[in-house]
Image (cartoon, rainbow, N blue to C red; front, side, top):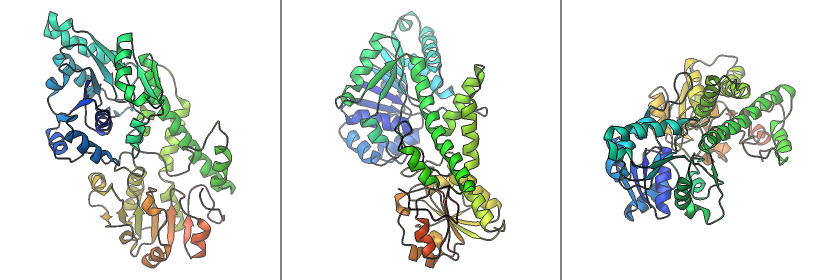
Length: 450
């Protein structure tokens, strides 16, 4: 088969590379010439473990190509994936201008039957808009072109940043929205290499497939905000959120995933998709009350760590040096979009703090947002030198078991504010640290995190 993937961002590059990995001929298209030139040189626009090696391998084998030429990529193409960005508008709705621009381009250049697939996260009804744009473009080309048949399908991605390759190659499920038997046959053939190990493919109508992606992300965001709400109440009531988490997580109906307390979710999906689903409901006369609360809890949670720091120092933060471990919204990615670290650092700077931060991967990306307003350390220990407090913001493996004797010697004051509950409070107290975490009273002697 021959496929095209339009858009070489996170979703598009992972999608195209993983299809090439199973032997499919893939051309990844982007309008950004510099990005394409970099990809030809093996320079990737994103960080994802294992992706660089996989891209190099498939380029060398002649299965993965990069181009700005949509015309050649669409010619005789079996499947074309639209994987461009859908940034949120000011009102929270998904901006479809890039998706629809690609649809017009496909209609201007396609020469034979193909399945046009929306891979980007798009609101319900987008596939119909994509079809309309393609039909208009074909009609403008004349009678011969307007006779070209095509199908539109929805194939939402369920990739976790930091584990995207495994998620694609070993999917929990593959969701495909189709409107014809012919499209189903093409998509089933395309995904056959991924079904050999029993991974399920679920065919459904297109609106249901479009809604599935939003509903999945909204559910996960809800679990996170619910657990953070519970954690905040635990602190007030003197309960231990880690014990509560274990207690409810043992119920198979709830499960253990996405019930860790913390400082809020971020990234490219959850914030954007929750807002978009709320907006879609509003446009259709319905109020997503639960999701509005989820969003509100999450925004408040991003300030919890700063509030603990401020309370500890009696609001007198000016001139204090604060070490920040972790900048990306989660480990194993350089993604800074909607990262809690941005909110925390903004508050620290506004309070007059001096901030030195370290992240194993995300510091180059962080500079785009933070510039030179903070200092970037060469490693986690340099960030601690003469620090009045350490804020653990992202739970990178590098931070999970540091030498606390070294940590204590480097810091001016031995204060740790742990936004991810990765340390043992009893251990730290015994060696002279003041330790604050999420969902446990600071005077409560809690056990280590499971």
